[in-house]
Structure formats: C-alpha cells, structure tokens
Length: 262
Image (cartoon, rainbow, N blue to C red; front, side, top):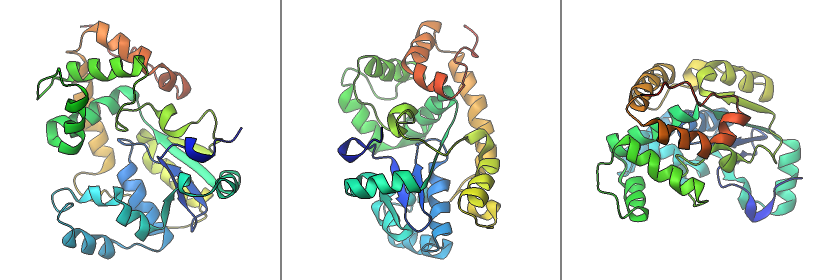
C-alpha cells in the first residue's frame, strides 16, 4: 500500500532533475546530503550558496542552516513529496529511486541534545520549554531524555530532531531502494551517486560539510561524548529509551543495550 496525500511525512523530498526521493532525517547527515543534491542537480554551486549566505543575516552565524530553508529548496530544485497532487505522488513513489540514512538512535539523541541545548538553537529549545513548562532552563541530558521518552510513550508529537526514524520516513509503507548509515556515509554516497544517479562526481567535494570538521571525524567525536553522557544516565531512563525507540532499534539492527549500567 502506498502512502499518499496529506499523510505523507514532511521529511520526504523530491528532486525531479535527479529522479530521486530522499527522506531527510535530522542529525543523520541531512545538511551535507541536501547540499550534495543541489550540486548534483546542476542548479546550485558553492559560489551560489556562499553568495546567499552573505546576503542572509539569518545564516551568517550558522551557514549550514541555509540548506534547510525554503529558499535553498527552490534553488536546488527540491520539493516536498506532499506538495504534489496524489497522481504525481504515486508516479514518483513508483518510478524514482528512494533512500534515506540512519544512525544509532542513542547517538542521534545525544547529538540532538548537544547541538540544540549545549551549543544552542533558540528556535528548538524555546519550543521545547513551552511544551515542558515544568522544566527549568539548561536541562541535563537525563532530564531531556526523560521528557522526550515520556512524550513518545504517551503518543505525543515530538520535534523532528528526536522523532523516531520510522515516524519520519515510513519505511514499513514506502519501499525504499536504499537505506544507508552515517557510519558508512562515504561508501553509501558512492553507491547512491554512481549506481542510483549514474553520475561520476567527486564524492569528497560533494560531501564536505558547509563548515566545521569532516563528517566522519565529527561522528567519531560525537560517539565518544555520547557514551560518556549515557554513563551518567540511570538504567531506568536508558531502559525507557529502549522502549520508546524500540521500532528504530529493531528495524535497523541497532543494539540498545550496549551502554553498561552505572
């Protein structure tokens, strides 16, 4: 059964130029992939990206935010699948290559906490504190986890940065051609670009982040910090995380019990 109409997740993007559908999952390389798809389409160059960054005060402090804005989607020829009519949605779901990437849910949760609460993203954190008015500012990782798993276990909607993969991309309903992982980003990128898009582009130039360290080195550092953070979280909360994200752990082959009890 195809998922069509208003029920389509908003994360699912279409490139008609590339005949490609990409479900972008926050905290799983979505920034570099959106940039790469724009470059591969031929509509975007790094010079175009940088010129827009210079003219947009919202992105000067954090250039990577630009690729998530509607202005970039228009430049890159990206559209949300939900914006097409039903016949057009069905055609693309049947005829375009479809992919998305995942990562260990435990690492993704820590990465979201680190970037949004420690580094700071007022748009996300202000919304979080409005929904959790009982919490004080500068919450700990354990408090953050407890809040979001309570929301999930009570079937409340949560922010896309920690929403489960299966809710974001509907992999049990949409027949994806390829599901990669952030751990194998270079290999996955080579496969998708060469075998699904039939292009011979330079992978290293396509997948350089817009700023900061390389994706692979950043991932290694995030993993180390994540396990250090989970070591300070009670086993009760960790077990609740396993329950709340059980579908993601099961569907994508991750082990939720790799962090030893305190």
